[in-house]
Image (cartoon, helix red, strand yellow):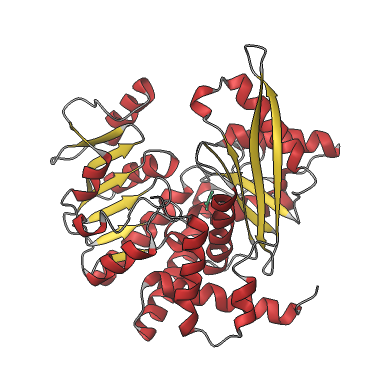
Length: 414
Ligand code: GLU
């Protein structure tokens, strides 16, 4: 049975609570979204029929600044998932000290079944529906699972047509031509690689011949393959929704990517052995990188994991039960709210660039990303050592402390 991600989120808040000296009321507030918009979107398909789609946008908390978070297209999207993801965004932005709150949106759909024209209509219907619920100083959406720069361009265009003027910072993850930031496409993977590098240094493993397995081959999973390869790490197994591939001698990023583009899956890649998605978790590697969906690492597979380090590029990939098992085994989990924060950090840079009209070089984006995320890693690492707790607990301690402090200054009103 899939764990409800919203329940998981609330449990993670509770697991940090004993290490924070703040009133219970702040925890109560931090377990509920402020407001959730639910939409029913009719879309005329290419065959002339009309199909209804359910969609949401959750505003979780804005004590630190405007709501911020991506939009996901997936059959599994539902209200509780969107709320959980908006809660994780709230924690994430606070962990890396962004002046932003947390939000998330999603449409329950299977994008692989829709033509480009249908996807555009669905996206514009969603953008119109949320147009009174988003804004540069209010709520700033971005890409997430199965959405990309093209999706963001349609949303920005729809929003700007509704408003009648240009407002590039209402959305991030846009194409460069529409006011996007250099480095945004690879930012989630790049941030994860900085975090992994720092963790390996702390563990005395940096520079060693290490092997990795990556679950999920979307934006985060595929780019992290490329970056790890560039760092000299060997990626021996990768998976997508259709299955997994394994080669103990390593998988070449360029060739796997080309195969995936051509066949729509990594499965069947020449020279690799096809294994199941579950088998990928059992491969004997040093680093395991969940980069797919939430709730994938559970109490039923945690015992089989052999990795020493887990880098969570997905949001919520590990259930609290699995986390307890893995920690007992001595696995270091680099939690989502830190490990995948590179995406929203560069989104924040894009927001700043759009507001000032001053667009940065790729080098500047990279340097500022590295500085911010590396600093955040060391802050959390120190809290972990200080309290002798897990990295996720340390990240939540840091984030909840910051958010609660902002809420205290603001006051509970209304
Ligand atoms: N969807 C990404 C995440 O989960 C990025 C969000 C953003 O850039 O606002 O962190």
